[in-house]
Image (cartoon, rainbow, N blue to C red; front, side, top):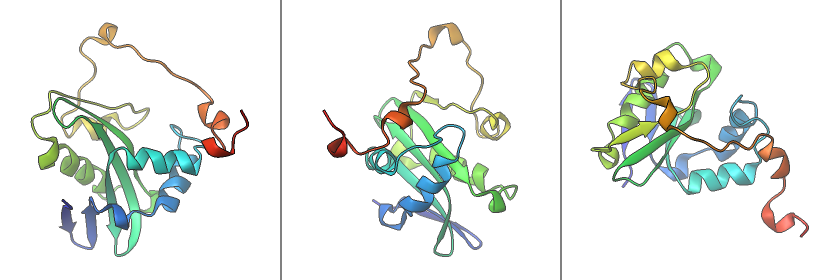
Length: 156
């Protein structure tokens, strides 16, 4: 089911057919968290997550996606608002919409990683890790350089 929310001239939508994957890729490839990400990885990440687009008219100006089992856990990823539309509360609005979405109600835990938007996420209920010693991760730096070509074009 597609959901949409309006605020003045802005729209948030879960309609996958509205997504401008090229614009999303263009932003992500220059972001600090996904620098150089190949288009086929962006396409696959959207296909296997719950995407939210932010629009002004027909132009996509923001994006976020949720990775979830829809029962216990959600990870908020790839959140952005184009620079020219920042400082208008649109990012906060988008995250508020996401964390209150009916399909994501009642989850036990939400998580995200951010370098510089802690204040934004605190305003919608995220907190610093209470027990960071319980968290573990695997990080593969430069993975996008290795994945620059789609799998069917790589030599074996």
